[in-house]
Length: 255
Image 1 (tube, rainbow, N blue to C red):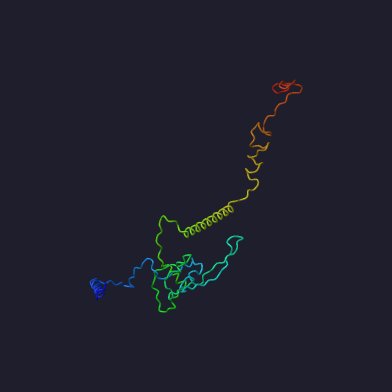
Image 2: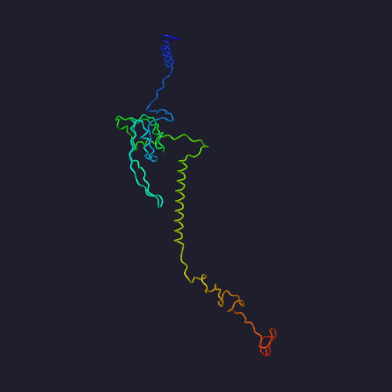
Protein backbone atom coordinates (compact mmCIF):
# COMPACT_ATOMS: atom_id res chain seq x y z
CA UNK A 1 0.00 0.00 0.00
CA UNK A 2 1.41 3.31 -1.03
CA UNK A 3 1.74 5.89 1.78
CA UNK A 4 -0.47 8.91 1.56
CA UNK A 5 1.50 11.91 0.36
CA UNK A 6 2.18 14.36 3.21
CA UNK A 7 1.42 11.84 6.01
CA UNK A 8 4.87 12.30 7.55
CA UNK A 9 4.47 16.05 7.58
CA UNK A 10 1.11 15.69 9.28
CA UNK A 11 2.57 13.47 12.03
CA UNK A 12 5.33 15.92 12.68
CA UNK A 13 2.91 18.83 12.94
CA UNK A 14 0.74 16.82 15.32
CA UNK A 15 3.71 16.31 17.66
CA UNK A 16 4.49 20.03 17.47
CA UNK A 17 0.91 20.99 18.30
CA UNK A 18 0.88 18.64 21.32
CA UNK A 19 4.09 20.03 22.79
CA UNK A 20 3.17 23.64 22.16
CA UNK A 21 0.49 23.49 24.83
CA UNK A 22 2.77 21.98 27.48
CA UNK A 23 5.06 23.95 29.74
CA UNK A 24 8.76 23.41 29.01
CA UNK A 25 10.97 21.93 31.74
CA UNK A 26 14.58 23.12 31.88
CA UNK A 27 17.17 21.47 34.13
CA UNK A 28 19.10 24.22 35.92
CA UNK A 29 22.50 22.60 35.51
CA UNK A 30 25.06 23.07 37.07
CA UNK A 31 23.14 24.66 39.94
CA UNK A 32 20.95 21.55 40.14
CA UNK A 33 22.63 18.19 39.62
CA UNK A 34 20.82 15.70 37.39
CA UNK A 35 19.32 12.53 38.78
CA UNK A 36 21.55 9.83 37.34
CA UNK A 37 20.67 6.13 37.09
CA UNK A 38 22.18 3.92 39.80
CA UNK A 39 24.67 2.26 37.42
CA UNK A 40 25.82 5.30 35.49
CA UNK A 41 29.26 5.07 33.91
CA UNK A 42 30.99 8.31 34.75
CA UNK A 43 34.62 7.64 35.66
CA UNK A 44 36.62 4.66 36.90
CA UNK A 45 37.82 4.59 40.50
CA UNK A 46 40.80 2.57 41.77
CA UNK A 47 40.89 0.73 45.09
CA UNK A 48 44.65 0.46 45.31
CA UNK A 49 44.79 -1.98 48.22
CA UNK A 50 43.12 -4.69 46.13
CA UNK A 51 45.38 -4.31 43.09
CA UNK A 52 47.93 -7.13 42.69
CA UNK A 53 49.46 -5.80 39.45
CA UNK A 54 48.24 -8.82 37.52
CA UNK A 55 48.06 -6.61 34.37
CA UNK A 56 44.85 -8.31 33.30
CA UNK A 57 42.93 -5.03 32.89
CA UNK A 58 45.70 -3.51 30.77
CA UNK A 59 45.89 -6.58 28.52
CA UNK A 60 42.13 -6.79 27.99
CA UNK A 61 41.59 -3.05 27.34
CA UNK A 62 40.71 -2.67 23.61
CA UNK A 63 41.94 0.95 23.55
CA UNK A 64 45.19 0.34 25.46
CA UNK A 65 44.46 3.33 27.66
CA UNK A 66 45.61 1.77 30.98
CA UNK A 67 49.24 2.24 32.02
CA UNK A 68 50.70 0.19 34.89
CA UNK A 69 54.24 0.18 36.32
CA UNK A 70 55.45 -1.96 39.21
CA UNK A 71 58.49 -3.55 40.82
CA UNK A 72 59.11 -6.69 42.84
CA UNK A 73 60.03 -6.86 46.50
CA UNK A 74 61.21 -9.85 48.50
CA UNK A 75 59.19 -10.57 51.61
CA UNK A 76 60.78 -12.41 54.57
CA UNK A 77 59.47 -15.79 55.61
CA UNK A 78 56.40 -15.61 57.82
CA UNK A 79 57.34 -18.79 59.74
CA UNK A 80 60.71 -20.10 60.95
CA UNK A 81 62.27 -22.27 58.31
CA UNK A 82 59.99 -20.93 55.55
CA UNK A 83 61.13 -19.52 52.27
CA UNK A 84 61.09 -15.93 51.15
CA UNK A 85 58.40 -14.76 48.78
CA UNK A 86 58.31 -11.99 46.19
CA UNK A 87 55.37 -9.71 45.52
CA UNK A 88 54.59 -6.96 43.05
CA UNK A 89 54.40 -3.40 44.33
CA UNK A 90 52.34 -0.89 42.35
CA UNK A 91 54.26 2.17 41.20
CA UNK A 92 51.89 3.69 38.66
CA UNK A 93 48.29 3.11 37.62
CA UNK A 94 46.90 5.62 35.09
CA UNK A 95 43.90 5.72 32.75
CA UNK A 96 43.76 7.97 29.72
CA UNK A 97 40.11 9.01 29.51
CA UNK A 98 40.70 10.75 26.20
CA UNK A 99 41.02 7.22 24.74
CA UNK A 100 38.66 5.32 27.03
CA UNK A 101 35.39 4.28 25.41
CA UNK A 102 33.76 3.29 28.74
CA UNK A 103 33.20 -0.32 27.74
CA UNK A 104 33.79 -1.53 31.31
CA UNK A 105 35.88 -4.55 30.29
CA UNK A 106 38.66 -3.63 32.75
CA UNK A 107 36.17 -3.60 35.62
CA UNK A 108 34.61 -6.89 34.61
CA UNK A 109 37.88 -8.80 34.20
CA UNK A 110 39.53 -7.55 37.41
CA UNK A 111 39.64 -10.67 39.64
CA UNK A 112 40.32 -8.72 42.85
CA UNK A 113 37.67 -5.96 42.68
CA UNK A 114 40.14 -3.09 42.36
CA UNK A 115 38.20 -1.05 39.75
CA UNK A 116 34.70 0.41 40.14
CA UNK A 117 32.36 2.68 38.24
CA UNK A 118 31.77 6.12 39.71
CA UNK A 119 28.81 8.27 38.64
CA UNK A 120 30.99 11.41 38.60
CA UNK A 121 31.18 12.92 35.12
CA UNK A 122 32.46 16.46 35.72
CA UNK A 123 36.11 16.09 34.84
CA UNK A 124 36.35 17.98 31.55
CA UNK A 125 39.68 19.66 30.87
CA UNK A 126 40.91 22.28 28.44
CA UNK A 127 44.09 20.29 27.80
CA UNK A 128 43.81 16.74 26.51
CA UNK A 129 46.94 15.70 28.40
CA UNK A 130 45.18 16.37 31.71
CA UNK A 131 42.62 13.67 30.96
CA UNK A 132 45.20 11.04 31.94
CA UNK A 133 44.35 10.39 35.59
CA UNK A 134 47.07 8.93 37.79
CA UNK A 135 46.43 6.57 40.71
CA UNK A 136 46.05 9.40 43.24
CA UNK A 137 43.23 10.92 41.21
CA UNK A 138 41.67 7.51 40.59
CA UNK A 139 41.74 6.88 44.34
CA UNK A 140 39.85 10.12 44.93
CA UNK A 141 37.17 8.94 42.50
CA UNK A 142 36.89 5.74 44.53
CA UNK A 143 35.21 7.54 47.42
CA UNK A 144 32.38 8.67 45.09
CA UNK A 145 31.43 5.11 44.19
CA UNK A 146 27.92 4.39 45.53
CA UNK A 147 27.38 1.52 47.91
CA UNK A 148 26.26 -1.74 46.34
CA UNK A 149 22.64 -2.82 46.79
CA UNK A 150 21.79 -4.68 49.96
CA UNK A 151 22.16 -8.44 49.88
CA UNK A 152 19.39 -10.90 50.50
CA UNK A 153 19.13 -11.45 54.29
CA UNK A 154 19.04 -15.21 53.70
CA UNK A 155 22.16 -15.17 51.51
CA UNK A 156 25.53 -16.44 52.67
CA UNK A 157 28.13 -13.99 53.91
CA UNK A 158 30.61 -12.96 51.20
CA UNK A 159 33.89 -14.82 51.44
CA UNK A 160 35.85 -11.56 51.46
CA UNK A 161 34.01 -10.33 54.57
CA UNK A 162 34.32 -13.72 56.27
CA UNK A 163 38.07 -13.84 55.59
CA UNK A 164 38.54 -10.28 56.84
CA UNK A 165 36.55 -11.00 60.00
CA UNK A 166 38.53 -14.19 60.63
CA UNK A 167 41.80 -12.28 60.26
CA UNK A 168 40.63 -9.57 62.68
CA UNK A 169 39.48 -12.15 65.25
CA UNK A 170 42.81 -13.98 64.98
CA UNK A 171 44.77 -10.77 65.48
CA UNK A 172 42.64 -9.78 68.49
CA UNK A 173 43.08 -13.23 70.06
CA UNK A 174 46.85 -13.08 69.58
CA UNK A 175 46.99 -9.60 71.11
CA UNK A 176 44.88 -10.70 74.10
CA UNK A 177 47.08 -13.77 74.66
CA UNK A 178 50.24 -11.66 74.51
CA UNK A 179 48.79 -9.14 76.97
CA UNK A 180 47.75 -11.91 79.37
CA UNK A 181 51.21 -13.51 79.20
CA UNK A 182 52.86 -10.15 79.86
CA UNK A 183 50.61 -9.48 82.88
CA UNK A 184 51.28 -12.97 84.27
CA UNK A 185 55.05 -12.54 83.90
CA UNK A 186 54.92 -9.12 85.55
CA UNK A 187 52.84 -10.42 88.45
CA UNK A 188 55.16 -13.39 88.93
CA UNK A 189 58.23 -11.16 88.93
CA UNK A 190 56.67 -8.70 91.39
CA UNK A 191 55.04 -11.15 93.83
CA UNK A 192 57.43 -14.13 94.02
CA UNK A 193 59.89 -13.82 97.05
CA UNK A 194 62.23 -16.62 98.28
CA UNK A 195 61.45 -18.28 101.63
CA UNK A 196 64.30 -17.92 104.19
CA UNK A 197 65.24 -20.90 106.38
CA UNK A 198 64.28 -20.76 110.04
CA UNK A 199 60.94 -19.10 109.52
CA UNK A 200 58.52 -20.08 112.32
CA UNK A 201 56.17 -22.81 111.25
CA UNK A 202 58.20 -24.01 108.28
CA UNK A 203 61.03 -26.21 109.59
CA UNK A 204 61.08 -28.98 112.22
CA UNK A 205 62.63 -28.06 115.55
CA UNK A 206 60.91 -24.75 116.06
CA UNK A 207 58.79 -24.31 119.18
CA UNK A 208 55.17 -25.24 118.85
CA UNK A 209 55.44 -27.27 115.67
CA UNK A 210 57.99 -30.02 116.24
CA UNK A 211 56.86 -33.60 116.03
CA UNK A 212 60.13 -35.20 117.19
CA UNK A 213 60.17 -37.10 120.50
CA UNK A 214 61.48 -35.24 123.47
CA UNK A 215 60.51 -31.76 122.39
CA UNK A 216 57.80 -29.97 124.31
CA UNK A 217 54.78 -28.48 122.74
CA UNK A 218 52.94 -31.13 120.75
CA UNK A 219 53.28 -34.43 122.64
CA UNK A 220 50.45 -35.42 124.95
CA UNK A 221 51.70 -36.14 128.52
CA UNK A 222 51.93 -39.85 129.11
CA UNK A 223 51.94 -40.83 125.40
CA UNK A 224 55.22 -39.73 123.83
CA UNK A 225 58.65 -40.81 125.13
CA UNK A 226 60.64 -38.06 126.74
CA UNK A 227 57.61 -36.31 128.22
CA UNK A 228 56.37 -36.40 131.84
CA UNK A 229 54.95 -39.94 131.51
CA UNK A 230 55.35 -42.36 134.53
CA UNK A 231 57.79 -45.24 134.02
CA UNK A 232 56.30 -48.78 134.09
CA UNK A 233 57.11 -50.91 137.10
CA UNK A 234 58.92 -54.25 136.77
CA UNK A 235 58.17 -57.29 138.94
CA UNK A 236 60.74 -58.44 141.46
CA UNK A 237 63.19 -61.28 140.72
CA UNK A 238 62.01 -64.80 141.23
CA UNK A 239 58.36 -64.14 141.02
CA UNK A 240 55.78 -65.00 138.47
CA UNK A 241 54.25 -62.36 136.43
CA UNK A 242 51.26 -60.80 138.07
CA UNK A 243 52.35 -61.67 141.70
CA UNK A 244 54.28 -59.34 143.95
CA UNK A 245 57.83 -60.41 144.75
CA UNK A 246 59.17 -61.02 148.25
CA UNK A 247 60.12 -58.03 150.19
CA UNK A 248 58.06 -55.68 148.10
CA UNK A 249 54.96 -53.86 149.00
CA UNK A 250 52.03 -54.32 146.63
CA UNK A 251 51.69 -50.61 146.63
CA UNK A 252 55.20 -50.25 145.26
CA UNK A 253 57.12 -49.61 148.51
CA UNK A 254 59.88 -51.76 150.12
CA UNK A 255 59.02 -53.77 153.22
